[in-house]
Image (cartoon, rainbow, N blue to C red; front, side, top):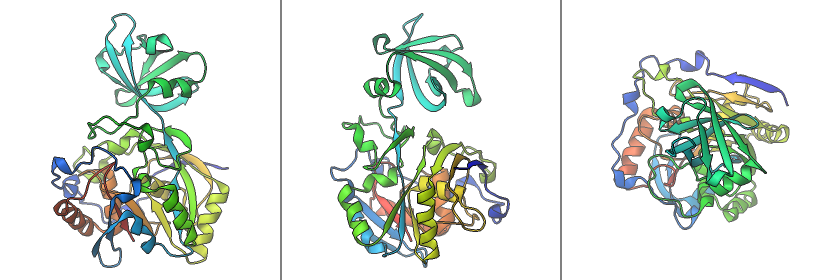
Length: 360
């Protein structure tokens, strides 16, 4: 596998976005439409179809997804696995409660973390978790006030994390998750995400089987989702927003499957914005997807020219978020803002545990 350099969007892809304001992507969302719990049956969510041809809207159920897929298409899933990255510990000297969120593994036992309260977390401070089976020492303060923590433990880190950690649910979900697995896709495989690729939460093993039976290929890529996914855009001018970087992997055989689909005239349909960012990062200007791994900071907003995807399955996103900008780049801002207005009127469920839409 070749190693790809970080990907940033080209100037060419930014044309037409000169005067784009973050406020253009604001919409009013009643609090009660934010889904607090996953549905009993993953695939029973509602599905809004937004046509990329004429912007028309249809109201369906997620199992109807099969009606929008054709033989020879390729569905691309992100097989990352969320780690139970939220840990609660005590400062050794004072016993003060400290909450940490693992963001990024820097090297073996050193992690970049978000620490609360930050004031008490100075370099040299030691934190104990779970009666001492895990200990951490803050060794540095890095970008955006994040801390580098070196962990000490006996055994396997992932197993200790499983025992002590909690799922890092986004801040807008206030209910406690009863079953950790409901914040994982059924095909989650490679550990490393601080957030779930939530479009994939709607798929069951049975539904994926039906997709295959229809003659649709399923390819997998990996993008470890960072917490920046939930970070609101704080600048007024969209172009000035700095994207967080995320690690992705595209395997040789999967790149071939996706490229062959395109060659044969099939469509590439991304399950989620994370698969979309991976595909668009690893595809050259020639429209060929390259196998490899690397860090991407791709920021997709209106004016961007899509090189690989023909359709997208995704959830409903936060106002003024980079994800709302991404779907607006694909379907057009007016179309998306109108669809979201309809979704609010029709009382769709929003965000991570909410309903889905397919843009195709």
